[in-house]
Image (cartoon, rainbow, N blue to C red; front, top):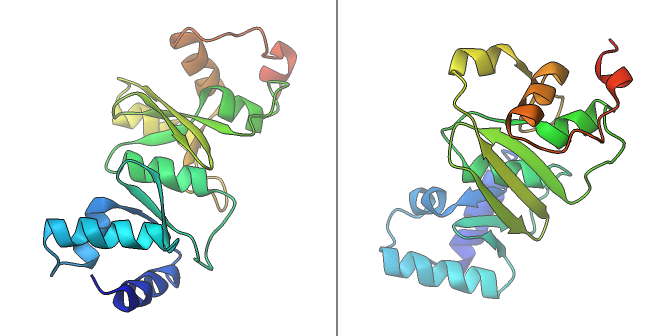
Length: 179
C-alpha cells in the first residue's frame, strides 16, 4: 500500500462522508495488497497519524472533512455491520429527557448481533443482544436527523431497560408516560 495512494483513496471516500472503516472495508479499497502488505500498510498509516485504530479492526480517517459529532455511532455501526442496531436503554431515554443523567462518553445500543463493550477514544459502546424479531424492531425504531443509528421509541427503550434488568430508579415516570 502506497501512502500517497492511500491518502487519495481516503480523501475520495471522505467526499462521500465515509471516514470510519473496518479492516474488511480497507481490504476492498486496496485489493492488490496481500494480507501481510495490507497489515503493514495500515500499521504505517496509524503510525503516521493518517488513520486511527479505535478498536480491533476499526479505523478512523483522522483528517476527514466529513468528521461529525456522531463518530461513536458510526463506529458502533461498523462494529455490528449487517445486524440491526439501535440506540436504546439509557441512551434513548436520555435523548427523550426521561432520565436525569445525560450520557457523555457512552452509548447503549441494542443489537441482533453479539453483546459486548468496546472502549474507544471517542467513548464506550455497550451492545446488548436482543432476540426480538426484525419486524418488531423495525416497527418500533425511528431515524434521528443526522444520526447514523436509529433510536427506539420511548416505550421500547423502557421495555428494553426492564428486560435487561437495568437500574430503573433514574427514570422519571411522569416524563416517561407523557406525550
